[in-house]
Amino acid sequence: MLLSVKIEAKTLGTKELFHNLKLSIEANEKIAIIGRNGVGKTTLFRMLTGEDKDIEGEIIYRQGIRTVSTAQEHHEARDLSAVDYIITNLPEYAKLKHIIDTYPDTMGENMAKITTYSNALEHFSSLGYYHIEDAVLNSLKDYQISEEMARGPLHRLSGGQKRFVELVRVEHSAADLALIDEPTNHMDYLAKESFVEWFKATKHTVVVISHDRDVLRFVDRIIEIKDGIATSFKGNYAAYLKQNATSTASQMHEFQVARRRIANLKNDLIRYNRFKEKARDPDTIKRFKTLVQRTQTELEELQAIEKPNFWIDRESAEGLNKKVSDNYEKYKSKNIKIHKNNSTEGARQLLHVDELQLGYTETPLFQPTSFRMQHGDRLQLIGRNGVGKTTLVRAITDAAKGTRADTWRAGSIFTDTKLRLSFYEQEINPALLSMTLAEAIEHIYTELEKEINPEIVMRLMSDYLFNPYEDARLPVNQLSGGQKARLQIIKMLANSPNLLILDEPTNHLDLPSIEELEDALASYHGALLYISHDSYFAEHIGGDKVILQAQ
View 1 (cartoon, rainbow, N blue to C red):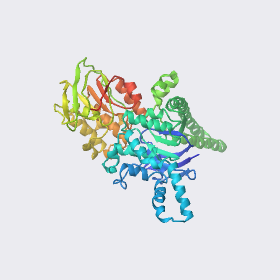
View 2 (cartoon, helix red, strand yellow):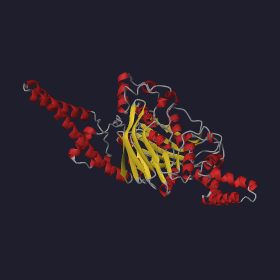
View 3 (cartoon, rainbow, N blue to C red):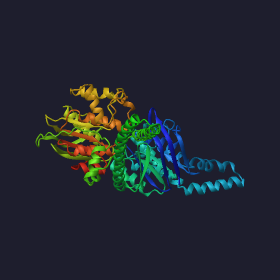
View 4 (cartoon, rainbow, N blue to C red):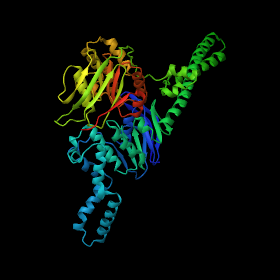
């Protein structure tokens, strides 16, 4: 066993995240940690890496284990090149390089130093460090980080590029245990393919926090954080769905039995109290008093148990028998509630892109591109990072406002006069970051000249899994990734659009929320243009494909 975790209790502010959480990690496992947004997955990682030591419990590593984790901040390394940052953080590299570089000038005929130097040369070679620079550059190239960028200061790279640098550092670390948080966010399809191939091939233990089903397909085990504890499911995503459906049905039955027991205990309590009040014999009074106390204790214990979070994927839910299905509808976890636009506007053409080319220099980013969209169409935009997918959708949003983007190089964009377009972006509008959640929602609706009042704000927060009372005053810049994603969905649907443009909408969403979004979009009657490298999402939404080819 590489790692054993026993957390008796962990709180964050006033919220209890974990209680009696236990998990273990074995050698050579590929493990995914999943759970609803806000359950504490990243906090658990911070505890495993030692960044968060405020715990009640213990975390025990096997002696001598080498662990690596993806870093979130790079303040101390900001002036290092990406290549140097990766290489100098490799196990034993700095120590061995120091010996190889300095001992020839000082060892003379000292046999001890000669032996140390000789061993260092051999070990340096066995680790592949003589060719490590070329290997690192090639790995970075898989994530579209050129040699010029790789040799420049780390602080010049974007947030997404720094994530890729971290992945390359992990891939070359040869650590016994690698901890990676959301590895495939911001990846295009080829970069994601490169990561998945490494993930499948590596012989070391890798633990990822991820709801990317393309990654979950290749894990050996899934650990779900739910209701403060960790539950282990052997196998990949498909195996998890089957086991989860079975265990959730069992949990619902147990919960229903407990609810019935509570109702019976309440009736017993009333009955015992009546008998006690009517009794005159001291022994009889004492007996019923004991029954009242015993019943009251059991009732309080059962009432203190919170309702578990129940979720079964759509396909498994369709296969439930009627009794279990009825229970699931009654008890299932709350998902985001999207009010679907069921209006039809006929087969009108909403958008026509003809031989379009865009770019930030005289050279266009991509080859001439043409497509049309009418009401009800689905279109997936595919291309490598940097080829201009986001630039294209921004040009479309500009055209819908009657303006032409500065990036325009050739071709045309025609939009219908009745086009109502909404754009789901990965990044929150900076103007909203300093507002509270309630203020941001009000601002979004006011800007669109839509009806808004405190009651509507409260309802929207509730529909999108925010606590209307506790979360209303949360600053937007302090929301989690999942919470920001849900705020983006509120913004996207506020103006009842007939054309939706989505840029990687499943990033940061948990599995139930991804499925809820897929279901809502499947019944959406307007046109849908989307960028997504989630193959499950693309398969569910469907539609034609437009591939942007670099110029």
